[in-house]
Length: 449
Image 1 (cartoon, helix red, strand yellow):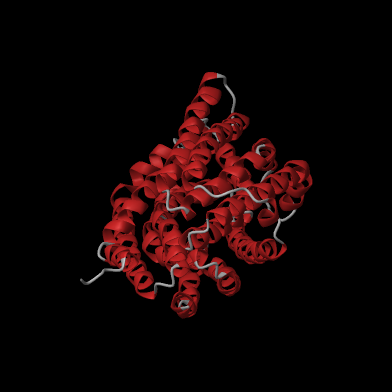
Image 2: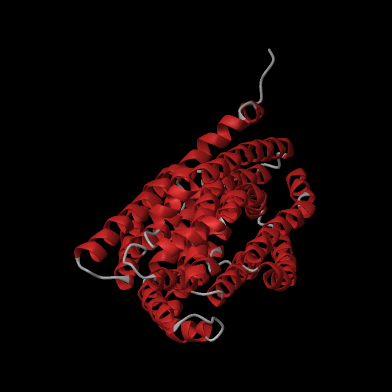
């Protein structure tokens, strides 16, 4: 009698449906990820109807400061995803638990530091940005409130990374929908109901993190009970594994700071062009944020898939899954660009009721429409490298991309004004993708064992 290897049967089943498998993981993340920039979009839209562009500029700069914190510590999510995916792929439930414990402990410590030091940090940043006094005042109010909730936001990011590493995208959907729907409801309640302005939208975002964390903890406890394993203090505090986590986190931190610096430089140069240009660019950057988060649904899907394929040492599965993600992501990015080209004017009007800002944003709408197709490959490759915990290559690629961006930015801005600023940002995205693709062969080698 011929006996079939059940492990090989499972592999064949996985290989037979890569496109369906990718989509089943990606669609909850696309839906939930779109709600993430809607925190900023709703914040901007609410203050955008208060009648003065300084409110939009204040939220934009305050959001930029908070994003330096949230995305600067993005390694809490990205590093967690990669390590959990590798442990889950290898069937090590004890390590799956230990990764979560290490990451949550680190997130709470870093969040507390942010809450304590946010004022001097913000004061330093404002010495580098030439915004008006009114804009900077509103930005400080917004950032101050959101920084106090940083421990909650970072813990939520860590739990989201853990869900993604476990390929449980639906739990990620529940967490993000909870945070962002609650934020939108509270935005309207505080601003239009209670008469608050920038402080109201910041307070709404901070309170929403409480709801998201409560839901995430309930879900995580149920999943931990289902996977089994034990909490082992010695494993949580294992020196070698902590060192490996910190090395990966260090590289992702450097990579993320470089990316945030590029975005901050874009905002700083927008501010130098005046409050109206800053407000218009802030509105258009929301287009990019929405498309980036939507397309990150595929990047986040591929993180867990790549990590588990490498954990199983299955190079063929890795190739098929990466190809399927690329096809899906490329097609969706084209669809988003078409939507922006056709309906961009309507979206601009939704985000602001200020006539001069609407007119200015329409001048540069073409850049927001092109960016989804130009930037999707960088997002997808980021996900591949995160899943493989190949952080050194991510760091080096981002340093190179930032250097090219800075070299292009100043002459482009001098020659073409705001069009040059958007063109330089496009170059940043293109170089990110090209440099990561050059390193991609190392990921395939990991899967070969």
